[in-house]
Length: 558
Ligand SMILES: [Zn+2]
Image 1: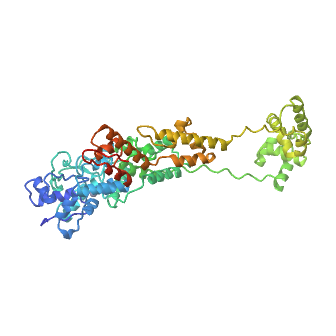
Image 2 (image 1 turned 90 degrees about the horizontal axis):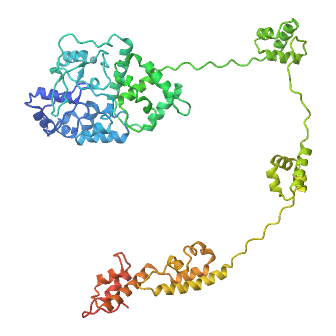
Image 3 (image 1 turned 30 degrees about the vertical axis):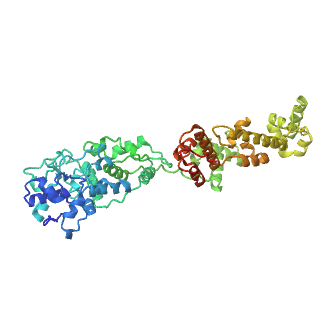
């Protein structure tokens, strides 16, 4: 256990603590420091997702309570990179950081394949460094400053400085404490520093990114995440009610919301990730993508919905009719009256006609209502006419030819329809039925003969239903008609070989063959000739023992 380990500062990187340890102990080399900290000179002290935290934890003073999990959650970028990952990925990454080399973590999290650029050098805030030096006497590297897409300090809002320290660029661990990178002179001013809109967006991104570091990742459901995004887009009228996203509109409003920062954040200019993130999640998305999408949802204010049409005016009121009567009697034209009353001219025409007013315009044209004719006679006439033309048609054929007439007559005058339709046809005689009893008896007799023939075959052939059907010339025929062939089935049960019976028959045959050939009928030879496996019943297993060689001769098995 290490006798000394520096106390950590809020939001400090584990790499920063280790670099301060290296500096405080005046270690002669980074490898010596790694050996002291991890017991492994070849371990790497990476900035974002270091491994071997279990080894480190076991060497730290126990009163610190720095378990491997706490080291990962509070001193690395583990909470940030796993904030939107499923629980199984969170667990696997934590296990790799705790117990093993963390070499495959970046690939597992999709960081390696992501278009989001990881900062190459350590970054810091001049104000944070000044406060740390004033209150603690030394500076340190903060986690929130090393996150991709974070260009301003989430606490002070000023642009971050890029140090010359790039611990991850080489193959060897290099410890560079923040006190080794003190900036001298006037800090450079980025071109966006005076753009309030851009700085507001960058500050939001920095704040949301830093907030992920303070939460312990529990794992998220990717499907639920996508569904939440779609619901949010539906609420903002960028997706239909069933979740179909208007991709063109989404890209347009996304570009509009982040227009001030498009030239600063590459992910805002290159939005190829935007469409896939609202589809079904099929691969991991970088946390920065989720942060930008969440920020977009919060900042995008959809246009107010179109105003509803005013309710229809009640025109048939006494007041309306009174005004209409006065205006019409005054000699105004239909358009003037309609404009005065605020209604359509056709409404004026209709109600003036209803009131019986004398108008300079013509009354509304209404279809002449005729007495509803009874379609019955025509229906009956066409039904009878078709029967006279084609007397051979049955009722079903007539209904197919005159479906409307048949439906009307069936519904309104079924008695007449039955009386004036062809009589039901006589069913054709049924097909001659099979005499299954005779078939069964004949087949049973044939099966007995076939079974005897099979038993005579050499080498032995097992008596099965399939073999019997083959010999009877009807493969598969008996099996499909079991219910009609009871006697045949009883014969089948009597003559069919069980597995054990067939194996015993083969043993007997093998004994005979070896006996005739004067070969030594050892147990294994008999079993091999009989084609027996090791999985046989006790009766079969005991059978070859009766033919063990006796005085050089083999007795028959029987
Ligand atoms: Zn700061």
